[in-house]
Image (cartoon, rainbow, N blue to C red; front, side, top):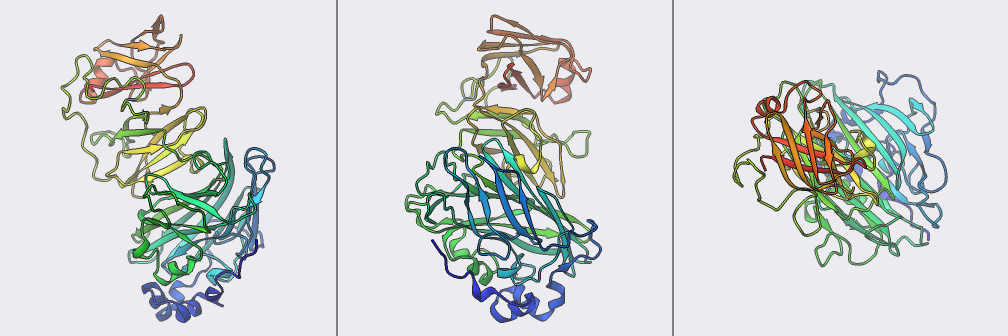
Amino acid sequence: MFRRAPLSRLLCASVAVCAAASLSSPSASRAAQDPMKHILHPNQAAKVHGSSGSTLATLTNGTGDRSLTVTVDAFGSFGSASAAGDATFDPIGPIGPSGTVFLSGVYFSEIGTYLATGFGGLSPIPFASVSQTTAESAFRTETLVIHLTQTVSRTPNGSIFVQAYEITNVSSETESFGMTRHVDGDLQFDGSITDFGGVAPDGRTLYEFDAGDDPSAASTFVGITDSGGTPAGFTIQEYEFADDIVQFNGIPSSVLNQVFNDGNGDRVTDIGYDVTLSLASHFSIAPSQTAVYTTTTRFGDQTLTPRATITWDPPDPNAPVALPPPEHLRAIPLDGSGTSPGAGAPGAAAPGAAAPGAAIIAEARADVTGYNVYSSTTSPVVPSPENLFTSVPPTQTSADVPTSSSGSFFVVTAEYGNDESGPSNEASADVPAATLTSVKVTAAKIVGKGTDFSSTVQVFLDGIPFASPAKVKNGKKVVQKGTLVTGQTVGAYVASKGGVVLVQFRNSNGGIASRRYPQ
């Protein structure tokens, strides 16, 4: 099926002309008054050196099921109606490869238009370097220097396309602006551009899938998420919506956090239509500081049906390290019981534990600016762009998460402005684990009782293993003696943490049963 010409009224010779001709937003007015401050041009002193000479790059991770090939410009725009090219994805199974995106770009409020040649009105610039899977470019306004790295990679269920914009403020004043990722997807696996769309429970992942696919496990799934700024809302609307973002200098407040044609309020469209996805973040960067805005496009990557809730405690405010990670990460399956593997009954106290409701969690550090949740089908989980599931504000210490068919592993990091901590302890969901009935912690040992322990079990305190192996008795009891690999005894470590620790029992298949002690 053919589409009409894309966004013709946004096609301009330059940002200044485009802004003066068609925009009434605050950024547009500023651009018209001081055009050179906001016009993008190649960064002559960018950190990446050399040039591929080309203004377009085709990135691919191969052929066959789960493969992705996408042609992009040096600003990060792509799509069949862009000046670059489509993103062709081959889902798992008998469905063959197809184009997926009509138009994709990041609206940059600093300049009042999209970071795009063609529909954004920007003059083409060359890439600094291009390989089969990665392309780098650099450009700038008078106040911001931007280094963009674009990478494709495979996942167990599909592919992801990660676009990381490293933004440095080179002015003497704080620069505040918005970044809104907009995707007009045309999933043509079924020969039609009529799709369904939806939003993950946390509001930070938007997705669409073919009308004939299974919404709980769509192989034709294409979704977007982002990280690095302050979340500023989302919307799912019918084509054409890109020009609305330009007109209002971001997502219009009248449709913010809304899904068009979602009458029952489940955040999934009730009927199929020509779906567009828009996801916004806000940035405020002090002079000489850098922030990284990462927008990730997932192709057939996962079902977003939540299978578990992961929850964690804030970093230790008295930790001796500069950037301490979150603590006590554990997973609670969404099976209606309200308990995780080995969590015990809600509100029940472990032997020797404080009474239910006792204040046992440390207060959050004031310098934490957010948390990043990473997921992987294998352990250990590496905090990398391809494993990023979502980012949440510092006031949120839980997230509903999906899992793969064989289960998933999770870690969480803390953000400290432009810095990020190391990972928390690891948690698992939908990976068979022991069921705990009791946990006892003394100064010299840990004893866990329950069912379904494997013949060998590794025991951890706050993610720290022991120097010697644990003893397992008949799959129902685990006894761990000795010191941690740090040399500390159980009693000394528990005392150093104010009496609150997370005890974990990891079966040989990787499945983790967790108990915060005292509970």
